[in-house]
Image (cartoon, rainbow, N blue to C red; front, side, top):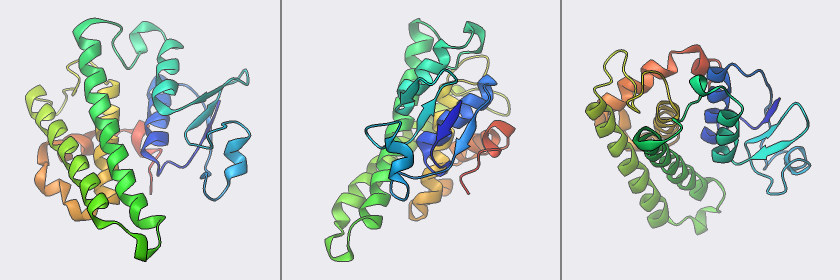
Length: 209
């Protein structure tokens, strides 16, 4: 398989970490749609990352759809989202909050990066920062509620789930991209939890730095 996109993208990185945990081999083509649009557009008409090319040539796009397909390709005991009932809803809910947090942090970054200075809309950037901050507050409370400690998992499962992956990456990305939010000071439980996740090879081998 080939994963197109930079690990600096939280969406690409959550796919990469999931592939690592699932034990699926892949190559990474580290490109961005802005600098190398043709490298993405020949596979994805939206010219977005992540884009995953399967061994049979089939192409998957959008991280949520890619992750669902990877789970479907995996044996039940390895899947990162429970198959049914409350455990599935809970992991999906936490993953959705985490992904939404990524969205807001990315949009806040884009407001400053892709607009001329005179067109920078500070209230819009602050609005997205507030929403990202709120998402991290929710995840921090979820970590405390789950009593993750040194070995527990955020999704309440007996092993790592997509909730753990996405929440950790949402936190790490926001801390890196929006340092003025000072998230480590505000959310120590989530900071400690994300640090434990980031220490795993599945995460550290696809560092965004």
